[in-house]
Length: 311
Image 1 (cartoon, one colour):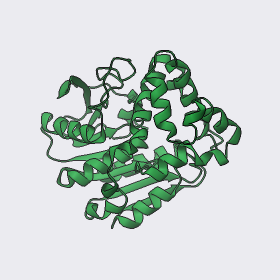
Image 2 (cartoon, helix red, strand yellow):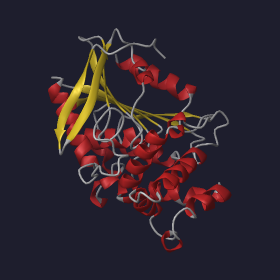
Image 3 (cartoon, rainbow, N blue to C red):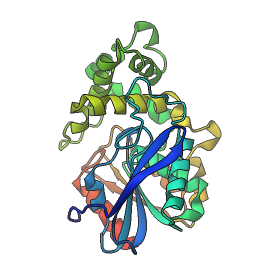
């Protein structure tokens, strides 16, 4: 990774519905624009995200999606209304930020959920995207959500039963994300539900022998923000209509250079999504890292190789 740097500009952008979105810019003010689209939903972004691009070549934009990180209000607060927090809102926020920073075109670098959001943005605003670099690729499809909340339990049966049994018996055969979202909206059950949800999050990415539990989940405030946002999105199929399958519509990105980096050991988000996306996206490149899962140093190296190539 490139050496740590500090932003030279930052602020809060009023994106409507009572939301203020944190943004910052680092690197070269006259460089090629690139925007980091972090994971989650609700994961926010750390300072390390400034280190994926050559700071002498790129104007690096980082923002925190609605409700998380430095953006306000915090989705983890019980009183925060999430009705205006959808994929469509986040896509509109990104476009508003591009206009605010007077950027003609920018490169999108998205990880995990950030790859889903990047795809949604790029398919709507294709003419504003110079390249897409996606890793730990997801696309927000119902079958992906069913896999991560239910089917992957075949690999981790004991941990999954504990995850399932944290919700009331009458909800265990239905939409588990929706069941958790209900518990997270109740002051009597929310803390225990957030802990149970995040324990499962740390379990289903752990086939990679180098995996370490996320420090994010050790903080009760961050844990709550993450759990409330991710269950909100997954309970609603990431607010993507059946007619808007981002993988099936990948042909819309023909002519936009794309690099997909995915770990073969990623049991959390199986390689299938990246493979199908690559097949449907003419001209895209798929890089499979055989010994890593949902992230890792080898994947980071290949992402940086892509940003270097496009600079």
